[in-house]
Length: 441
Image 1 (cartoon, rainbow, N blue to C red):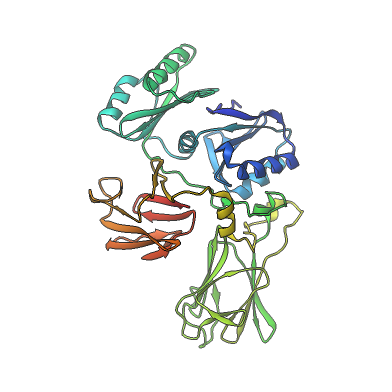
Image 2 (cartoon, rainbow, N blue to C red; image 1 turned 135 degrees about the horizontal axis):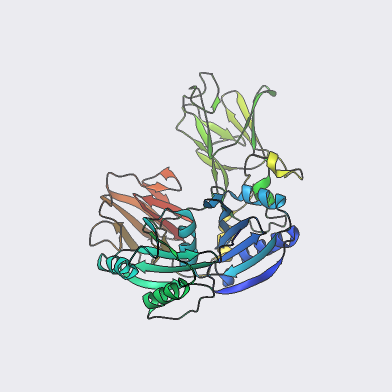
């Protein structure tokens, strides 16, 4: 196997034999040390290469090499496969945020063009990107080497290969071409052009809870929560929480079906979030109760009992197992994690920000009211010719920042849920058409 030698800013950990316990401690430290910036950890042997991407307190994405390139992994699968890898070594790099995003786009998205450097006029290709004012990533690779050139609105903003120097403002295109033409004397480069720069995190990516002292892998290798339906203290059926949500109601399309007239057709839903599990009533006729009180929405913790009509639903989170992780089939989010305290502890003071994932832009919210939309008067313009005709306002109200849809018919999603208005929390994901914005506070 030929390792992909990724570009980097500095080496945080020189190649060393992989020790599971030490690796757990290192990952925990990189997640909590914001000063080191984004980190890429590599675990490899002569047959396989794993990459783990870490930023802003969480393990963001992981992948593994294969015959057809790299394949994305859930964090659970990443830690499961590490346990089975023989005689691996580990190395870690510090990268800047733009490079972090470019590497994931290179590994995760499909190129618009893939061709040998001997069959394409690179100057002509780059001229076209610049004349069309496109945002793109151009990569050139050969075994053991990777060179990348990042464009934003037709301007080359960064060039990376090997150990990358910072502060260089001019000549990025020339640097890219010289590097390719020099190294192509030995063998041709494969040139790829990416214009889809929207990247995704792993399905179970999450932050490490404040005060978590256990192994990092235990956050992903635990068994799923269980929901035990009971009537008059007699267990009727047990359900495993194996997806992003589980619905409760009288209709047969619900995940938990309770055929009783006291139960509404679509009564309640339990949703997995990065902060934990949340119970929400769906406007039921007779209400949803938790801890003896009627609730419209409430977080769940281990041991909670939900009451719907005469039925009880016990929410149980099994303790992490020490057995082989391959038998486990769901990530558990640790109960009792108070997300607000973690955010307050680790996020520096200052105005909130909006981070646009697709083109790696960050907007500082310095005014009491910010408008996101398609029009020229918008503070943050939605991207693309087919951007939806929708207007969103983010305004300051007391200690809160409130998002409200103020115009247009298109749906606005917050953390995967259709919402017209919401008090924003740190790391909330706002989706409008093809644009994704992360609210940071």
